[in-house]
Image (cartoon, rainbow, N blue to C red; front, side, top):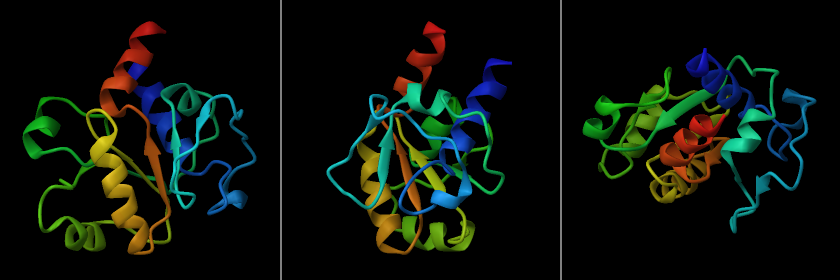
Length: 144
């Protein structure tokens, strides 16, 4: 059940209120939960903000940008693994992801996913980032 809720809330974030996709959902995340990134073109959300959304966006794409080894140990169900540190990152993203659908990215702690978000944004993707990455996500769900 916990894993289902984690998946559902992450998917709905991709369709939430954003300048990129306002029509996708009528759910609004309180400003107190939303983390504003220095880059105005993509939004970084806290794990708590992910949990505020219950209306899933069916076309959302979830990408774990950690290494294959990290991904193999544990990851959010339904996430695709595209390692941002690989030279082939953008080529793989272009071949595996649909630019017409939002992409939510995460890593271990939030640093690599910001790098990935900026690169994907430059390639024309609608991008959302999970603050504090997988570690923050686990901390949040373990406290629930």
